[in-house]
Structures are given as structure tokens and as C-alpha cells.
Image 1 (tube, rainbow, N blue to C red):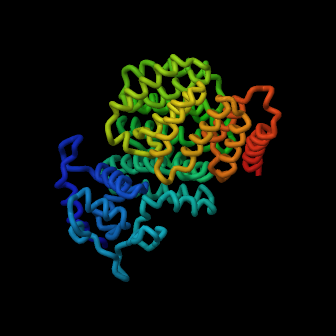
Image 2: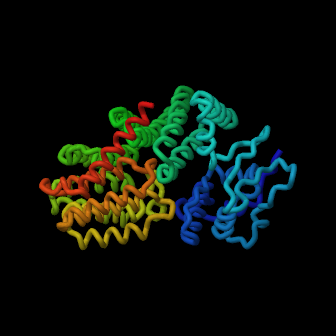
Image 3: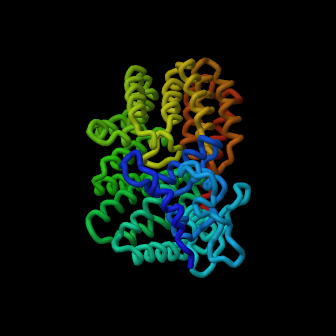
Amino acid sequence: MSEPNHQLSAARTRIRSATTGHALTRAELADAVNAWVYRQTGRVVQLSGNYVGKLERGVFRWPNADFRAGLRAVLGVATDAELGFRPAERGSDVVSMGASTNDPPMFLPSAGKEVDDVLRRTFLLSASAAGVGAVLGLESARHGLNRAMSDGVSVDLDDWREVVREYGSAYVTHTADELHEMLLVDVLGLQMALSLSSGDGARLELYKIGALLSQYMAQAIGDRGQRREAMRWWPTARKAADLSGDLHAMAYIRGRKAIRAIYDGESPHVIIENIAEADHLIANGPIIGRPSLLAARAQSHALLGNADDAEVSLTALRETFAALPSAVTSDHGWHCWAYPEERVRFAESFVYSHLGETEKAEKAQSAALALYPPNSRRGPVQIELQRALCLVRSGDPCGGTAYATTTLDDLPTEHRTRFVMGLGEQVLAAVPPDQRRTPTARELHELLRDDAFGAQRAIEQ
């Protein structure tokens, strides 16, 4: 049996939350550590409240070096020993995970030990070869055990919140195929959780989680080339958000759908009309639900050449960003509660690139590239494609299409999502009709066509 780490628990509860004035929660501590590590090293780490709980319960006694350094800094101690951390001794019941930042984390399965939730996604990927049913059985057992150990459903709800949070980080680094496999397991598991939940409050929270998982699923299978199937998931996400009654989730789902529609080639007029239906959420809902809706409106107006309307929406986006809590703006994941500054600069770059305002676009592009975290693969590529668009708009279609082709060629196929390839299509669409037969334009066209065919063949196999 592992012994609780009372030193860590005591150190955490001594710190007051700036939000509530009460003792710092495990999730708040995790967020603070993640932010500290990023500021100090530029690395993005994913300490979670769930993992902090395992440290406090003594399941793990030796977190990796980044986590230990961040915990020491946030909790104001000088040594690991003051937080009860010590390397696991041979034969000990305590598991040591990722003792060195240079060592890949490994699973150490043993009777009675829990699998670390921080590594849960990697485990699901490796287990997928055994079939979804086997993995689903493992997850169902884990959630069932959580319910059995709790007085109500609170522990299980916390676990589901952590699942969603993990996807916000995984969406930046994982491929569409990986996300699809992981999501399928969790969506099926959530169905079981809903069937077993008791109390209206728990169901409403699970509806919200269902909405967020559904929008990740819509985007993942859309990126796999299954656009028809993806479109069916968006109404499911919207219905779940509406049933939850959570205004933030309702606005977020509508905003993400509008952003996605831009890259899927939907009519900007239709996108703007759909956003208008959410005006009451923009006006009356929580501020952290607004940014995607405002960004989508600005970008759609730019596609139509409506410079004044696009600028109005950009101004609203900037004002909204300025009023967001720091916890929201410092989070570089794709959570519903995250909106870092690079997304504002991205929206500016998109708008000004399409409007041909090259100087403003270049300023926004430089700012965005400086803000992206090191593990961001697709965001910087999208910015480079907008640079290619600027070249086309400024009268150099050959240079622009050649730059776009080179940019896409350098990106591994598994990272060519709709958010990337849709921009490549926009670069090609900006080329004047009488210049689309040039060698560079034809090369970009062939790359986009071959990528689309390749994605379809992969699905059919």
C-alpha cells in the first residue's frame, strides 16, 4: 500500500487561490506549474489535477524534473524532500514516472497500481491493436471503480473533465487517426456514464463533456477525409451543449463550427448568418465563450472582401481578449477555456492577408510565430501559408504558389489537417484565373489533389 504524501498536501493547502481565496485546488496548482515551466523553459508540459491527486495519495513519489521544479517554485520550497518526493526504491510499491526529462515515460504495470492518467492517451493508442472493445472495457472498469470509491458522482465527473482537458492538449500534437481512435473509446464510455448517472446536475455536466468530445470527433474525422460523417457530429455537439444549459459551451461549440466551416469551404454568407443566430450568446454569455465566434465573423467578412465589417469584428475580438482572465490567455491548448494571444494574431493575419493589407498581415504573422509554443506543428505552417497568400495578393502568384507548395511539402502527411489544407486551397483560389496554368500553380493544385485522394484511399483501405 502506498502512503499519502502529507507534505505535498500541506504545501498546497497553505497557498491561497487568487480566484476563490480558499486553498489552492489541485487543478489550479497543475495550471500554475504548467505555466511556470513554459515561462522558464519554453516547453509545454501537461501536469493535471488528477496527477497531483496521485502524488498526494502517494501513488507516485518521483514526478519528472519539470514537474518537480515547477512544484518547488509554485509552492515556495527549496528541495524535493520538502514536498515528500523521493526516487522509488527497488521493490517499492511506489511508481516513479519519467524521472528524467530525457527519458520517455514508461508504463510499469503491476497488480494494484493505477495507470497514470497523464500517460493514459499513449496507453490507449498502444492498446488499440487489440480492438476498441478491449480498450473500452478497460476504461469502463476504471470509471466504474471511480464511482464505487466516491460518495456520489463528483470523482467521476472530475475524471471526465480531465479527459476533456487532455484532448485540448492532444489536439495540438496528435494526428487525426490517433485522435479518432482515442475519442471513439471515450465517447462510448461517456454513453455508459450517462446511462448510470444520477441527479440532474451530473447529467448536465456530462452533456457538456459530450458536447466537447463531439466537436473534437467532428474535427478529427473531418481531418481524416470523412467530411460527410464529420458534418453529422456538429449537430450532436450543439444539441449536447444546449442540453447542458452551459452558455460558455453553447457559444464555444458554435464558434468552433463556424471556424471549421471556413476551412471546409462553406459559403461565408452562410457562416455569417449562422453566427448571427448566436448574437445573444455573444452579447449575454460569458466572455470566454466569445472569441471563436468573433474570429470566425472577422475571417468570413474578409473572404467576402468586407474590410470595414472585418475590422469591426477584429476590434471586438481584441477587446474581448484584453478582458479575458490570465488563466485563459496563458493556456496554449485547444480547450474551450483557452484562448492565447497567438490566436488573435492569427485572426489578424488571416483577415489582412485576404484583404491584401500586406503590411498589417506581416506584422500579425511575425507576432503569431513568436508566440506559438515549441510543440505546435500546424499553427506556424498556417501562418506561412498566409504569407504565401500575401505574395499572391501583392501580385506575385508564382512566388506565392511556390512558397505554399514548399511549405506543405515540408509538413508530414499526418499533420495536413483541414485547417492547413484549406488554407492551401485559399492560396490557389486567390491566383488570377489566367495564371492558374503556370507551373507553380499547377504544382500546388496537384499537391492538394493528391493529398485529398490519398486521404480518401487511406479511409477505404
